[in-house]
Length: 424
View 1 (cartoon, helix red, strand yellow):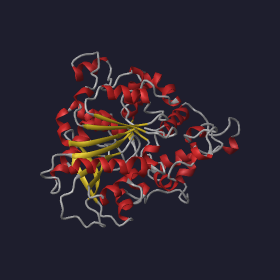
View 2: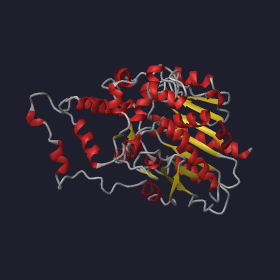
View 3: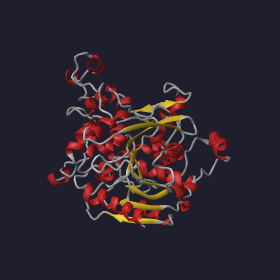
View 4: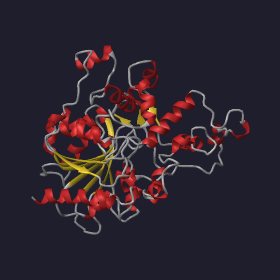
């Protein structure tokens, strides 16, 4: 979860309250969004947007798409680089690596850096069987055995279910393949929400710790007491509790990957929009050096595939964490809490002390979504953690995914840790 995406969310809330896209009274400059969207000659079209398969195959790597059904009926889509075309190691036993995206993202994010820096390609060329996960509800995982996406019950999930069901199903599936049979477990890498869901799984279903060789949590988000994001601080007092606001917002698809949303974001981020400032995580005080830290090529690719869609309950769950100062399960309200948890309060905390697998926590001082104090609070509860503090004082939440030196500081060190494990 990044400051940019929370800002977009705030902008949409402003729009829902009637905020104009241009200065009030300057009606000549207000774009008729619906006219733009319905214009058959519009130049902005993502009907043929590339998929993860395209991003992988364009660099010569083999790519596969797989589907797995979770215990609660969701059909999740995963992409795979089964072997390296450079190594031609398809007939060898290859250790498994599973990569999981953050909030609003999809498997498209990982290969966007290309073969020189992208973790999937580097892992493949290091001899790994690479799997790219997709959370339920995003552009690749919008199917269910009996629920339609048009029914609100489809969207009644938060990141709890993604961890408890989706990641569990992904691990079991990868270990059931021909290459996975006989392997003790997998290596895992998650960013932002991808860290939260792993913490949910290994604390709620501790038997899965035995299936994790090493886990790498990039910008781990669990406790959120010290989160220093102005939009979260502004919105969580309204959406972090069971009230009329959260009730109206809950269990809906939010920011799906389609032309409508992408065009809407285009209008929000126009220079004359009163909310255009929300569209950039950079500030006017940042230097040219600060603003030139990301891989611009990757940013251009990502902008065409994000947002990928989420349930509003995922956002609500994070807002609840911020307000409660706990890392705990979803607050359904008094009646439903009694049904789900057997009591109205307290809502169960995640027992992170039960996480026994080797957890590597990668964190930084400049991450406004995963504050150092919160990461250290999480680490204090975990018996088998390894801490990796970023020396770069400017390293922020997004840098873990697309900093132009991410290979040097994140990807290569992660692969070295995995290789050390495999060499034991």
